Image (cartoon, rainbow, N blue to C red):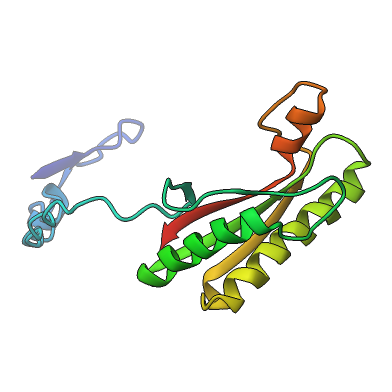
Length: 171
């Protein structure tokens, strides 16, 4: 490339020509991008498996509820037979965990009924443990009067609400 320089304001000035070096390739082209990494192979998807066992306790026809007298946590003779049958089933199914729910009727304060429901659940648990069920398989909860099975305000209905309910799940 040539560049021509001249001074117009100077009479008799000469014109000079300057030779410029050619453009370098570095100025004309951008650097090449780094080569792309080879894609990593993706593992095939895992095979579909059966759904896991339930993680929550559920009702089972194999274990029956028991009932209590008004303001009591004592196991009645008829309910002792029910607990004996429940204990036999639990011993025959050692991979099963048990939740004992204690319930009350609507009479009494919430606080009192929560405590009474817990005493009822503990009485049922104590009976089952004495019948040979491992205590570490049993959990307790009291709902007091919060989960009635009958909403009428009669003695027959209240008697149905004074109960211990048994729920199961696999270990």
